[in-house]
Each structure stands twice: as C-alpha cells, then as structure tokens.
Image (cartoon, rainbow, N blue to C red; front, side):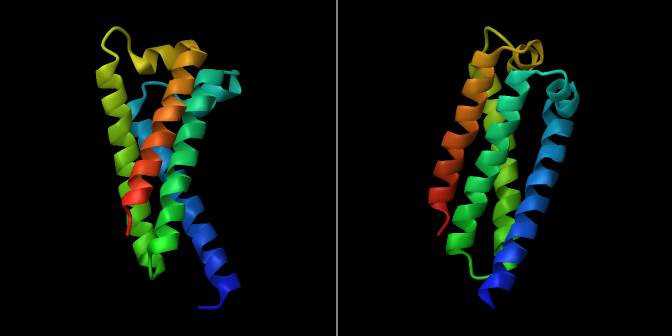
Length: 131
C-alpha cells in the first residue's frame, strides 16, 4: 500500500480506537462523566484520561510497527483497550485504603498522576509483547 495512504488509514483507525476506548472505559469504570469533570477543571481526571490516550496510542504504535495489515492493528488496538481497562481495575484493587475513582472525582492530582503512569507503563509492556 502507498505510504501516504497507509499512514492516513492508520491515523483514522487510531482515532477510532482511542475514541471508542475512552467511551467504553467511561461506561465500564466511572460513575461520573469524564468530559464534564474536565470541563470543570478537574486536573486529576484529565491526567487519567491523558494516560489512557497515550497508553492506547503506545499500544497502537507497536501494533503498526509489527502488523502486516490494518485489521491486525484494529485487533491489537481493541485488545489494548481491554488491557487498559483491566489495568485500571488492578490499580483500584491495589489501593484498598481509598477508591481511585472517588479520588479522581475529588480532583486528587497525585492519584491522577499515578493513574497516568499506570496506563503508560503497562502500555509499554503490552506494546513490547506485540510481535
């Protein structure tokens, strides 16, 4: 496939996977509306969302490096979204003294930074495993 066309198609697929991932993530994990919180200036939620976007982007970039076609990238992107959601639940599980979700809604920036870091760090692990 011509490089400019394939780049554009990967770009479109990436946007679709990231938007779908954020939508699914909000449905599954939060009792609040992410974009409402961000419009109120909730930095903690913004950091958490940024981590998800960057994390899914990292997984997609590894998928693009190692896949032979657009369908593989789409599959890896979907799998990456599922693993990002799983990482959120694991993070919530390991913070027994408080709820990550509640702290994010309260605007706790420290929790937002850790959520961002968990998303990015695990995205590199998932991405590196794509062959």
